[in-house]
Length: 365
Ligand SMILES: Cc1ncc(COP(=O)(O)O)c(C=O)c1O
Image (tube, rainbow, N blue to C red; front, top):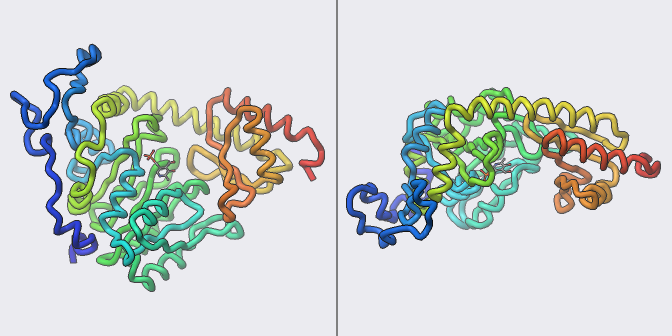
């Protein structure tokens, strides 16, 4: 059985759209894409060539990402953020009204949104506060073997918002259980912040494995909207059948190449070190507060905590201009707050707001 057999038959059978830039490289006299002969912007002296469509999968960027992740270029798909990768995977592998995804809430919300948008069912194997929000690994394996509708298993490592990583031994068991059965997607949006080994090295052995990475977090470029799907070429080929013809805009491609230049790696290391240090400060700032009932420092650039009077604390922070994440709509995260690791100044502002909050005795009860 090949991975093609797991994909939607109509996607496999469909004749994909072939864009002008895909059919012919942007060389010579270009009269094939109904573009303008010149740009209106002086900025195009800087070489953006805005009047031209960009490369569908920019070769230089793909090459640089392939080198970064230690894979051949044909294992890389660049997308408009990881959000697009999640959407593409769901649309390729889930038939509306027939197939399902599995996810483990509380987790990143876009897996569910992508599934519901596609008309796929959502099988939840929840993490419970009582178990410290750890993955129910036995529950996941049982669901995969019991429920034949499951075509995609979404796991997040480290998880948002609980910060824990997927255990390597469990991942091995899951990959065994899903062989010829379902795709496993490991979302490593926060992987650079943790010491756990990446799942990328397992792609060579497992055609049903896809790993998601992004420039939004540790590469400090959320505004670029640049995500990456890593998988064997058969999976990448399926996603390419339905991806928008030009997912990355020309300025995004140019800036992504700048962000990934070799001299930036040193800057990135400095940034990661700063975030590690600031996270220690954040944890020690929160640890000593009596209104903090639970604290999950996790392995990423945020912490999760459960507090007394969460709604009022959130409102107090917002009132003083400090915006942290609350989960009023999610009963599984009742009274929980997620705080991103910011700069020293951000942390000082947060500390001031928390000090003010702690002044009134009733909040400490
Ligand atoms: C686990 C996880 N995956 C993916 C994303 C989205 O990443 P991107 O900005 O590349 O779309 C986020 C954003 O917060 C996230 O937490």
